[in-house]
Length: 418
Image (cartoon, rainbow, N blue to C red; front, side, top):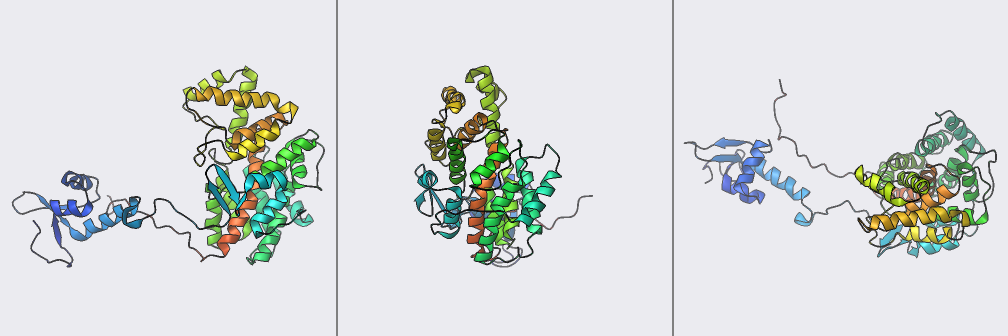
């Protein structure tokens, strides 16, 4: 029963255990569990039979539960952002409504980047790095320790390029497009070269190849690299892209927004995944059999890299496109066979399709590239998508990417311990 005073709507109103349970939508036992966890406070009723609860405190907890429960009171279980850039649907994905794998098959990375940024065709689009920005970025990247990873190198290069651009705070569309066309090639120009040959002209894929492999490229390999860049240019609101949009929502300039994306990219579940697949592929090639390598991964409790994708029930369309091109390169055959062995062996445990990380690993392993090369390709490619999302976010209300926290700690006010 409810305490008789004070009445409804007045501060200090008390609820019985039954009333508190009904308001919270839980069993009476759960109400007492909340008390033991410090989420609610209780007061014994006169005579010591049962407890009462502060109505405002119970209502606050009920509101918190409604925010946490997917679908409750129309709540959305995940953050959703309206975008015109990329749609992923039925094991396919589209850039501004155009099939991305078709675009990558017939257009260069630069042309695809322009399509993502402007929604207009730009035949023959080509990017070149400003001499001053490239020189500054190269110097600071050269000063980094030898073991520095790709994401760190590119992030430092982006910061250096920003410092060389006094107009970086101009967020008008034309200014940001100018930044985009300069930044992507500057990131490539800043990277160290494994061999003596450094390409500074021609398609971006050719320039990037000279930073990833000491081998002289053939046209088939350059086609794979350029296609990979186009395929990876965007993939809806991946974790790194969300970070970019948060930065752009706060009106960070394009260099800073890209830097935010690069920071997230470094995780093993995102941009670095292809490096893990590359190392696993080399182990399979050394063993001559995927079974012992897969067994060791499973024994260690690790997820098999290069397999499965939460957005595709079937094969990753990006992997399918790259594997088709790799089949035309004779030297890629051993790595392709090893990749198929990995998929077939893992299927005995869990049937999973190859994803783009495994396809990238086949390419990098068969092209004389380091295990980190896939991460570099991913980061350079995704810069186009990040800038497209930053441009889109600059057109939205500032600071809209500010979700509300759901506080689950002890109710205030409480005394400081001790």
